Image 1 (cartoon, rainbow, N blue to C red):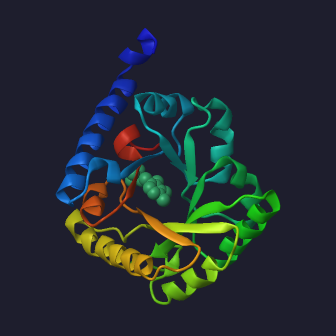
Image 2: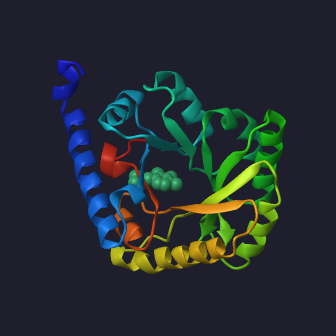
Image 3: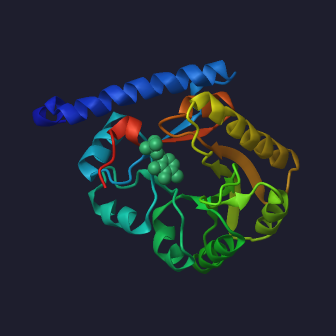
Length: 241
Ligand SMILES: *Cc1c(COP(=O)(O)O)cnc(C)c1O
């Protein structure tokens, strides 16, 4: 790290934030009867310039998430290390599946059977198997994408029959809650669904990832069983679009 980098206030903020978040995650994972290693941290890097993303990577962040295919592609050449693990976490149109597949190790935002089939076809063409999470609309909100809670198992079974995708778990974003304690019942509902599907031991499915919790509520999400939290603004500061 150069002298300029280590003294820039934005870089110091990111360091301070990362330290605080790491402590909160460790504390919440222990309080939920697990160890800090059981909860994975993702830095959500939408709208964040590569120079700041790279600073987070230099601190030990090992996983980043982006919402948009184009934005992720535009940053690829500037990331150090270039092979940092990347997941797509935003809505994906089927016509962009081919573009993004080679660059991410997981698509967390699979929100329809149609999209799962498109990923399966493209993966088969490339001779790969793609890890996916199924996004569940846990609060049943019209404004959100995701599979409905009701009938979820049926959708899981259909997707389990696609040979070139591997369902690794569930991703969810609960409804906005004034008080963050209120989000806990949605996280709890998602956790129960996760455990329920996991217990069915469906062929071709390995339920090991429950992705939930963002800057405002990742602590609550961990207390309810999240195995991966997606944090943006608490790490990098507020977004300027
Ligand atoms: C933006 C975003 C996040 C992170 O949001 P913050 O509140 O900034 O932490 C997490 N998950 C998804 C799907 C997002 O789009």
